[in-house]
Amino acid sequence: MSDYQQTPSQTVGPYFAYGLSPEQYRYDFKSAFTPVVALDRAEGEAIRLVGQVLDGAGQPINDALIEIVQADAAGRYVQSADDIERTGFAGTGRCGTGTDAEHRFSFETIKPGVAAPGEAPRIDVIVTMRGLLNHLFTRIYFDDEAAANALDPVLQQVPAERRHTLIARREVNGGRVSYRFDIRMQGDEETVFLDL
Image (cartoon, rainbow, N blue to C red):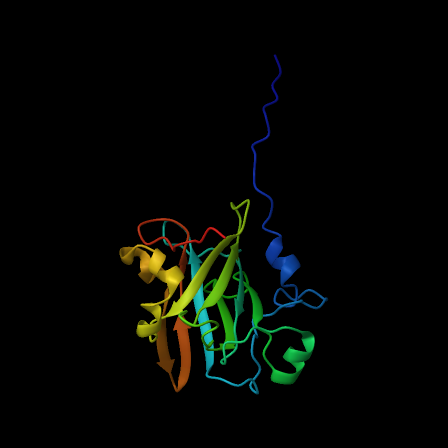
């Protein structure tokens, strides 16, 4: 009989934040996407999107990676690098939670417009973190878009008692508009994740 035991299994990582957002983690190579989605010259209402990824006990996760994709203020998605250069709007952002003292993600962007008739303004979100073998998808809607939210076909498929987990709260501090959106991975207030 051997004294050796089987090595416990573990998920891969958490290497993705460093590899996918190297500038944020102060590595000496350029990130493909950063937390700055819109420059000052981009048209539309400048907003800051901020939140935490929380575990089942409500504790912030320090090595999650959040990616967002959104339309511009007119509801158009970026089609090329020329669009980004011309408008100052990238349409896509990436932020790890490991460099902020409160383990937050934070994006500088603009409030999106309606991408298609009948839809509400939204930001699409991808969550990657330790313990997940596959990334998760969710959406962020806005609490000041109640009329549009009431018609959005995807949001209306979510049970009414769970829709609030997809709604970001508008906050204004010193004239600066922010939307707060926490992603809860487990528990009674778990964020609704979409099967895409």
